[in-house]
Image (cartoon, one colour):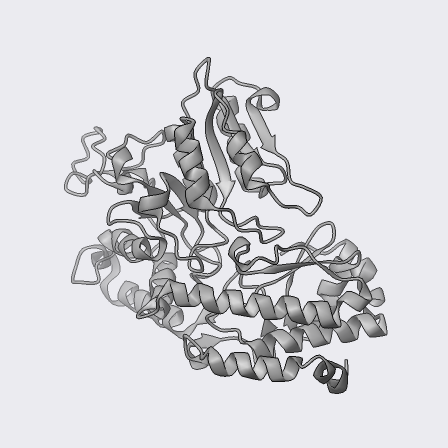
Length: 431
């Protein structure tokens, strides 16, 4: 794709203006992204950062010098590290102290919330979930229904997506029928990037007597949620926009009105910390959301997450979202100008208030295109059957990066280079 073609649309000047108006929120030297790589897959895994690496090295050093005493000695004792990290996560999702717990995986946290708060009766037994939900959410829902002796085919109701892959918020609200006990909904639909109106749907669910567990994995660290005012229950991972590292600990949120709680699944780390080492076989849970914890947390994983959270110090999430919305708007503009002639369509809502941090581009050769882009050092994500997901994550991506990625994709399409990757893409893993 020539610069002349790009300049015809004013995209290069537009990128320069946008980058001048939106200075970086975090210095580039705080990130470790391979040189020359355009990393637009932060909605799958955020990149490594210097603070995260430093924190892991510090934890390793403490292990080497203190051994088992690392759990108890000094201000950096590991024993309450999960609580300290949860306290730092809480304001990033608009929660009060004690409403957030961190540890395990998103799947484990979702099972814990469903097992604890899904209590079907003869009149209220249905679980709502979106059609095509992220697989772990559907697996957890089906498992919990089956544990109550119910048939998922009868007790689980799917909320249909339209032809664009979007959910109609009015239809979602209407589905909170009298026989529904609980719903699992995404803050941002992981395929299309559509953002749902969390506060409005939670209010509609409450009026209908339905609880909602929000999966905020694709919005935590990006959208300035106000969970204490807008939600009762939520789960989210920390390795996407929170950049906590591969498999970093997940989090759960429980509104303080629902606390204290006796979780469905009890573990010793969920104990009241003053009694955790009583070893008398009795379970006395923590008074806050910490009661949901199960086993001993991974200190090295928590350390990486704690380090990554330093990147948010002094940053307002409203500014993070504003930058994300500006960058995704520019991405859509560039895609319309440079990619639409090659049959690429934008599958994400164009209304900035109705989308998250990534743009889904639809094309029949999406799988092969993702491989061709990687060969040109552009890291994006493919989701079957035909979506490329590009995330201009606002902490480390700018408009110049966005334009360069779209230009390389346009050049691939113009040359037909994706043809050489079709067979390879057919057997490639989705990441």
